[in-house]
Image (cartoon, rainbow, N blue to C red; front, side, top):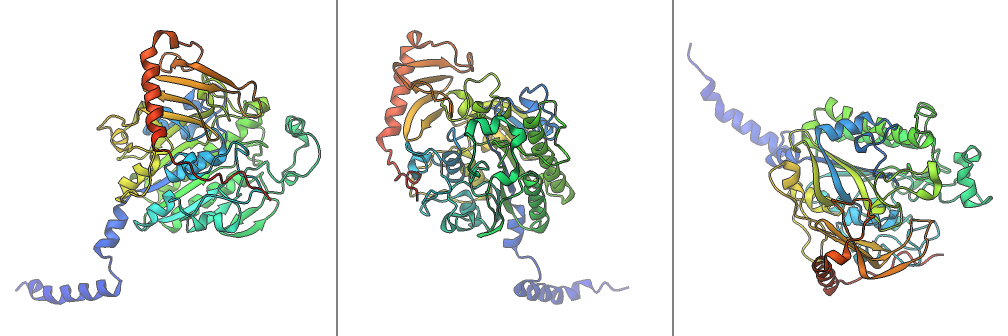
Length: 474
């Protein structure tokens, strides 16, 4: 029988071209979009370095995060951009030190419900960056970069927002001392905090039911994955917890040996498991990178209702290691080589790393403070980051260069301020030998102090500080 298929090729070709022109057949651009990796950032609030099973906690069970660490990369020298909420989140989303955007202050360290301002529109967020490459974007959870409509996520590159716009302890119903109120947790009800739950720009629930908020956030992420599985997406999931006050759903309440704090962390871990399962069910696990980390260290003021920095010194609000060094796990089967990574990394590095993976050019009209982690994640290169700058408000308190960290100023953790001390010469610690910062070795290494001073001098030589966005209140 004569083969007639070649005679039909011109007709088939014409039909394909017509369908492509009408948008019914995927064009090369659509194929390119599908090849781009998806990104999910899961950002805990006030989670300490020592609060996950993979980082050594003896009684908090985090099987899903532990598995992420086993299948991906567990970083042991990874830092938040700041030691409190607002500047830390600004650093993550812009890839820049908060002092450059004005999202830090010596007057009010974070934004409050009566704050006037938010993240300036002149800043470029990671969501805006990835939208240039055709990504669908969602912010789910805590924002804390401005609660007025013009500052909400949908005006900073996110297609969708669902969450509480600031910390979950704000808008507290008057009555009782702050410290005593949180120590007597039996007296705390979710209705005692009049925080709003917002969808895009509309308040849909007030007060938000915080008993179920962790569960609902995770469910929203799963829904977004399923709805956008045929195009690249970026999801920023920023949990309001385990920031105090602590709440957990009925399924997890009273289940952890660590008490209520453990209940909260274990529910977050359960949500991570649901998200990873959804990626696998949709066949997206080999084309998605998930990052889990925290905005700053534990709020030590609240004792067992706060977390643990493990072997690190101090906690939230301080520039000791416990305030800014965080657990960090990168997961991405086929894209990330499993390892325990002792290279230095920062949340500010995620902007450039994801931009390069998505094929988006970096902004050339501003100073960026991140480095590309891609070679380390892929297992074919060494880390580019050699230093960390530790700001408290607008003041540089400490700097790390390689193994060594110099403290120019020290002060206690958030709510436990203690005495502010200026050190000349600075305190010096070898963080690889002494991660707990107990043994000052300044007298033995004057040459290291000179090198760190040069690093600071170079940084400050071209530093243009942004206008303080946190000081003004109604």
